[in-house]
Image 1 (cartoon, one colour):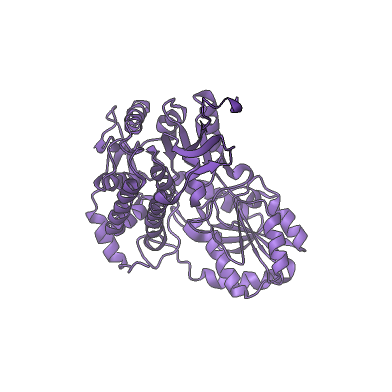
Image 2 (spheres, rainbow, N blue to C red; image 1 turned 90 degrees about the vertical axis):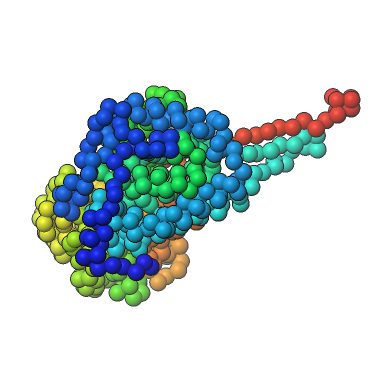
Length: 502
């Protein structure tokens, strides 16, 4: 864990940062071809941090062209695996050297707490880059069991030029989740960060160039979804798109693919994730800690947030008491204060959306919270809902609101948990090993944790069932699969002079 500074020291450091402004294309920073810019602001204060290039379709064309040129001439894709590995290891070292700068930059632009940026997001992003770098020269191709007269090789080849479209809730970490396997596979990338959070992607692109990544391999095009995201999704020169964000926007990329060149599409989308606590769960204080972490980490702006607490009747009251005790430690306030655990919501528009759900809470029984602390800040809220199908229990809020649903049995808990269009993650707490495994297998989710909240780690695939995902998985060796194509090479070993084999 990083040695944290004081609030005053973080603010002093923030004032010294040199923030990037322009898109990063073909190894250098460039303004938008139109010359237009947009403001990026600190959601905690509303203060403008600076301006960023407002790119458009012409800039996407330029970036894709440079990425294609880099891919086709093999300056990265055809490097020996060990050489690509060395470059990515150098990138990880440069990120480590600049880790505090990245953490403050991330906190300023996203409203995330400096505590999370320093202890989770930045170190985990560095670990992801290193992990995929180390994997480059350890993934073997295959030889299929053909006849004695033939040799069949099954090879992985980089898919080509990849569009990587990032969310605003984990800007740096999701960048690492995508560029790690994409660059390791030998692809060239065009990154489209969320308009609200462009800075860390631009800074990492600069560090990657310093690490020796050839120009044109890592490009960042900044701007809005309509201006940059859609042109990237429709571009005939893009071979694959990986998108993390809302289910509604994810659907659009499937249309863009169908309407253009049938590019590969991988989607990691929303969730309304259940946390089941059965009446035989052990150590309710520890359970409450997991529930609070799952529901309120990152202000609830997390696709895998445990936003539905499905609790068996006999243990509900005791569990809620312990949740209340844990929430006393979740201070709301200045994201650059290391004592703060709940920072600012990303934007005024998102703050208004979350506040509309606070209004819906008034029609139910609010157990804890329910108030706006200040513009952009919502206190952690726990609300008992009268129906599992209510708005609070069925819609993805993406804010610090936990819906509590009481059930009578294990079977009812599983049924309620699965009664959703989403299926990203789930958790179950029970001391009964058989029920834990039965529940884990019955839950329709890509990741199920038992007696804990979590997402696995870099070695385990992450993605969802139903409307939470499409086409592939982040993390693990499986992430490399989505940035490669499989090629079969069939060799005929017969001797043309041997007529017996005719």
